[in-house]
Length: 168
Image (cartoon, rainbow, N blue to C red; front, side):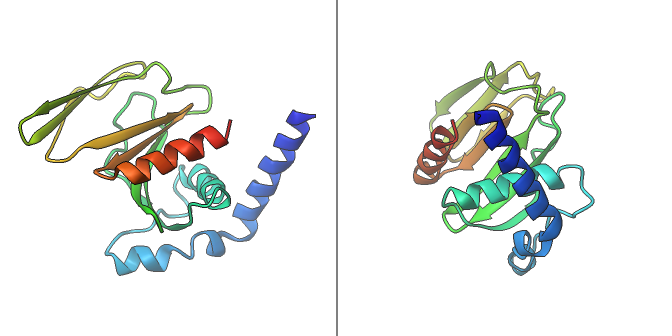
């Protein structure tokens, strides 16, 4: 019975994306206002990004804009990455194919004075220049084939963790 419900939910979201892309991506004006290029509808990531946007909105996290992410290609086999601007703040989401997960990814954080250093140990295998060096803390939230990346916003990271738990 649960699979039947999941099928209808997936079908409904898919039809919503196809029938109402301008509604889901009316956020494009917010992207333009902030000097960003909205994720184009012909992008291979568009469908997955739109479905996640609808799911986030249904979960109370209203998405205003989805754009391209500089973290695309961070991991081997990654299917894409997008920046989500929401009423609660901005974060990135890295996508893997449905058959792959971030479950075994190890994220190593080091705090050196006023710097934060991040390294990854896979699977999935990280890109060769495996280091993020930044002046602020980064929060990572794993959800199967999704990795949420939040820069310097503990409250937003906690909200996303709560959202992820509510999806299971």
